[in-house]
Length: 169
Image (cartoon, rainbow, N blue to C red; front, top):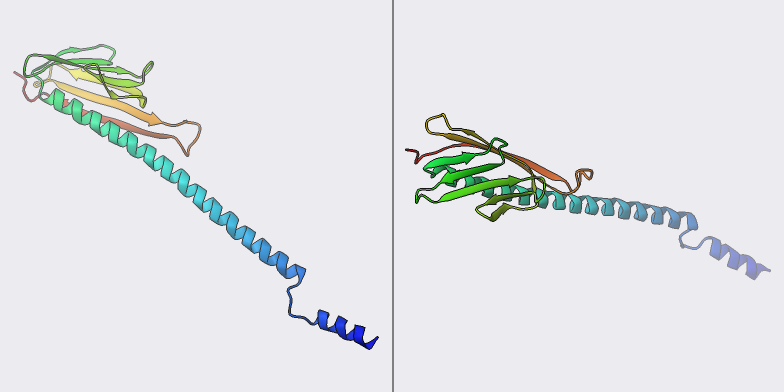
């Protein structure tokens, strides 16, 4: 009988962890994993939105650069549609160049049969002041990508500039 009491006493006073201590440690580790996963997922979402916004910004800046250079170096504006969706220029070599907006069907901004912007175009407008000297064209368009209902994937940017013809005669 004394031997059994000694064994029981040894097990009670041993240096092992209790079940409560183990549960506390597992709970703390689970919480840390949850917080770490949440931070990681938010970082991925932010990265995706930033990349989308950068792509839109780069496409819009490129389109503005091409349009600004073509309009600035044009001899004259041949046609500026009443609806503001198309613009035809006479170039220095007497050829014509056209810009056409199609925000409804193709979501594209077309320059002489070349898609300057594809799939991102939401709205586009050319406003021409032909009575000014030299003539002035105001370009404005909006690009967007992603689902507007999902704030984590949606990116949108407005672009606008005013250009006057330099080579106007």
